[in-house]
Length: 159
Image (cartoon, rainbow, N blue to C red; front, side, top):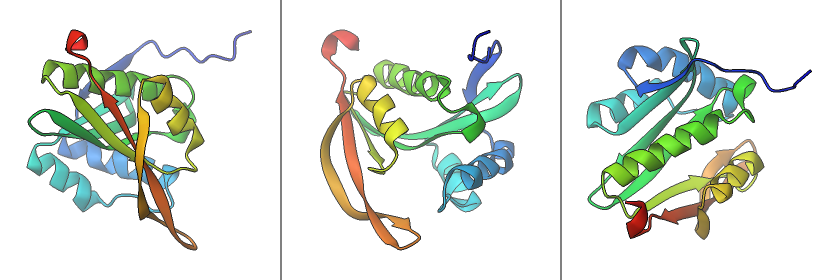
């Protein structure tokens, strides 16, 4: 018997305002300090590259990426805890890399908590490298936590 749960109907689509309620539920299940509904709505209104990933029409993850002239910044990438460590985050990150290449982006940035070991492992496996830190970036229950700044340079032959 395999421990892998089959996910035959994985689908990535643009985020819409009606998704925000499900997204907020995932945020609250994933983070001590989740983004607010207003932040997600503002990202949609601003036209940020906002996507959701579904399994059998159930929203299980999402991501938001800001795209500028030749760089992008992944602002949020999250998978519901029940679907983590199954490759869902990798699929969404792969999709962001695809979008970046299509837009001729040369470098992608993101921040991650140094205590988010699973996310760091994913990002490193996908070619991201640590390039710095943001001091006291994230709130915690006892103060603040630094953020690791990771980046991936897309080579010309990848574009």
